[in-house]
Length: 579
Image 1: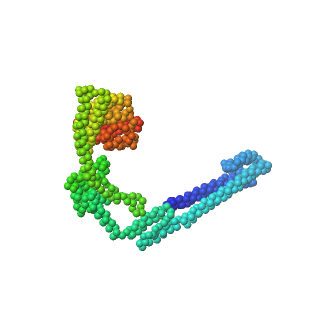
Image 2 (image 1 turned 120 degrees about the vertical axis):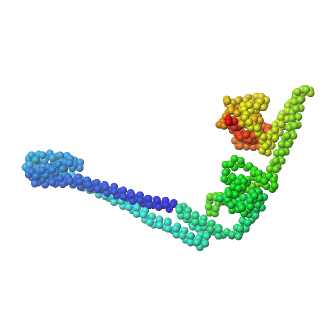
Image 3 (image 1 turned 120 degrees about the horizontal axis):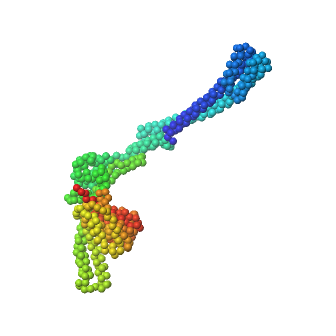
């Protein structure tokens, strides 16, 4: 328990007992006062009145002064009734007195009046004895409870007197002795308080300090310098640029490669604030922007940086590594700086360019023979060079389907090379959304008829024009509708919708197929990805290319799906705004 809590509990309890003692004393004193007042004011007055009446009676009420005195005290007695039955006795006394007043010399009446007075006096004397007994009982109770509460208060005060000074003084004394040991450079000294109070927290802080001092004392400065030099040499000989910053942005180290690509000198960079250098150095400003403007960088994650190095354009993958440590004796992790690492990916980029060029060349060269195959098949089907039997026609249909599939694959590969090379040629102009959708529907009409699938159109009225590349957008819609037909069941319906949402034109393609499992939704736009277990044909490039085409136009392509209930692909493109 905390020391403060102990003090509050002990003193608060003592204060409460004292308050209780005071309250009880007040209650009992008031009660005794009230009971004593009843005896003195009521019963004593009655005895005084009756004594005066008895004196007047003995002196003879025939005399006028005695008669008046008797009447005055009788009147007072009638207004001082306090006991049960006293009123009846007083009334009887008044009636007997009236008779005696008429016959003042009647000895029998005089004796009767004297008896009435004696009865009233006896009643009040008995009441005095009874009330005195009650007052005595009250006094005994008061003495008992006040003594009990006073004893408890004394015990609490005694316990506080015995324990509290020691609980506070002893840990302070032990801590003072330990501080003297630390002052004598005995850093192995530790304080051990088992209690979980302020002294326990103080002991923990003291032990942490002693541990850090002991660690510092045990450290070998020469050894640390050697290790520092070894690490600096290792970093300086790395082929990848490395920049080290502390938590304030001061440059701690930059290897030779980093100095070369930034055009800085070591003496102009080390120990300087990176923000100040970034003001005059564009490359440095680009490297540290993630530290000061995370939102902008987050929008283009893992984007390679193009830097002129080694007499050519080179590509680097930037990574900012936070340096976090747990200080000695502490539990919370603390960031002490950052390391900016630039991995040279130029060889991989060159291989990627070579792959892209190879795919583009092969795809382009394949289109000519594929087109020739399709033309030959068309000539054979036209019967101009002779008729074909059913078996031959089946073979021609197979050749035609394979040729169309190859032509689609080569088209997707060519589109992919545009995406990868960053040379997507866009012609963004005002376009009619419904015309684009009708083109995509017409392109898939034959495939829909083969599976007897219907299109359900939901096109809003008075649609505005949109800003888009009609060919690229039509290609994307054709691809999405083709996928919807491929994954829909026969005799089902594909729902197509066009509507405006804020400043965007929204196309929706919804099928009633098997849907996509939740764990694959964030992967279907990746290149070459196909849902595991899917038996449908495809390269896995269509959705990836579609997303690139739409985003290049300033739009978005998204999907919602529920396994077993189908999928909905949604395109949003900007609406043409009137000037």
